[in-house]
Image (cartoon, rainbow, N blue to C red):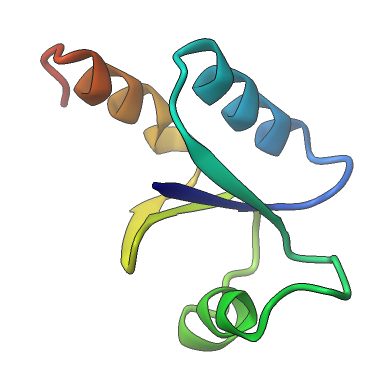
Length: 83
C-alpha cells in the first residue's frame, strides 16, 4: 500500500489523495503535523529522510517521490506505458 505523507491545507496533498481516490488506489494518509503520528512514521519522514516538503510517497519502505510521480503511478497501476 502507498503511504502519502502530507499535511493540512496542502493543495498538492489533496490532489494526490483525489487522484488515488478516483483510480481506486489504496493508500494510507499520514498528517506529518499530527501530534499523534506513530514513531514509525516519525522515523520515516523526519528521521530517515528528513524531508522539507509535502507530499512524499512511499510504498512499504520504498521511496516513490513527491506529487510529481503521481501520473506515473496511475499509469503503472492502469497497466499503461509510463516514463
